[in-house]
Image 1 (cartoon, one colour):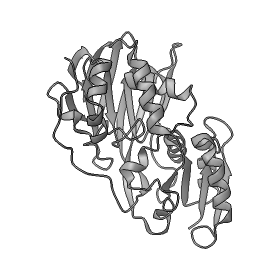
Image 2 (cartoon, one colour; image 1 turned 180 degrees about the horizontal axis):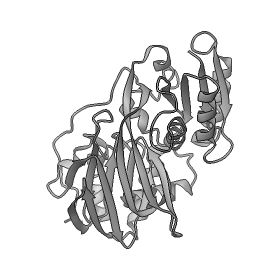
Image 3 (cartoon, helix red, strand yellow; image 1 turned 30 degrees about the vertical axis):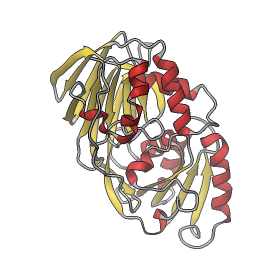
Image 4 (cartoon, one colour; image 1 turned 45 degrees about the vertical axis):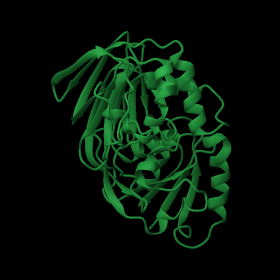
Length: 324
């Protein structure tokens, strides 16, 4: 299989550049027919993915963080969310800050094992999510999500993380950014319309739209999400204080925070989120805009190479997270 590795050399505070050098030293299948290209600017990964398919690649491997994986996936689909090449395979190798998508796919973070799935990992269809949001200047942006999107607190945390040093690692970066953001964050009034029905209108710190399960360096923000079921998992969390967050932080990593009766849980094929005042929107670890935003599932949009461990484990008993 003709394989192209698309590497973000800046991912993971330089881990991407080291990974590119490592790929160049490997021998045997799948390396024998592999070609390595590196990104040079935001959006370049999508362009490289399209070009790779045009030149005959049948497996495109994204090497970077969740933002790089999103760009590569976007390049493998057309403007309508259809694959440019229906038999092409999308694979990922983690070397970013959060490395959250691979937790759902069952791909190890361990450098000694993170290539194992490229040898014999199963290929299965995976959903993607078409996203439309406001750029803040009157323009509307159309983009793609393959992992987790969020509105409100999550979008603000991503903005802070992307402006800071990432040398502490994904979990510490996101945790510290969440604490700092909560010191001044004020919950907006949100209105959710899911599958053309208005189902939620309340003050909320956080709205999560999950295709996959993890965000923020290992937080199980959408623990029941299944990226093969053709549905979005939507969670709405009301007001909560910094003290509540610190007391209940372990529930975010375990995933049982969603069993709190104050958390609204929906499943839908599409959802629109409005907020007053407009809320920041995070998409797979990037912060491309703000509400109003719309999310629509694209069933089985990608052929994805999974690891042997799917990451699909049940939630544990919950503790209350919301103050409302």
